[in-house]
Length: 96
Image 1: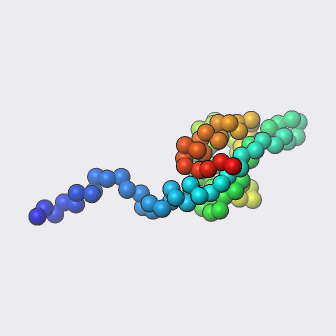
Image 2: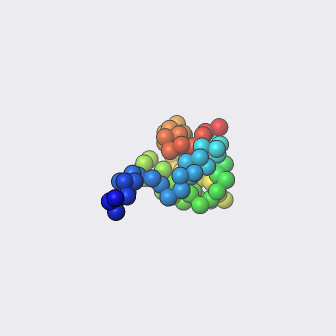
């Protein structure tokens, strides 16, 4: 028998259940108007705050906008609600 593992070339994530955790979360995406009529997109409903920072960074990069994580929710500058919904759904999240 060969010493090579036939499964070495497969792209198996460290935690295969992570996608399931994402699929069971129901996030809400809403737009809020702040000072001077500026729009903010709020993403709420995260059960585990571990991935929130990474997800916020990915969303900000994809949208080319600023934002922050505050009180377990993602706040993004601008009126990008539809695009945020599409990006989150493509990452496996359910949107309420």
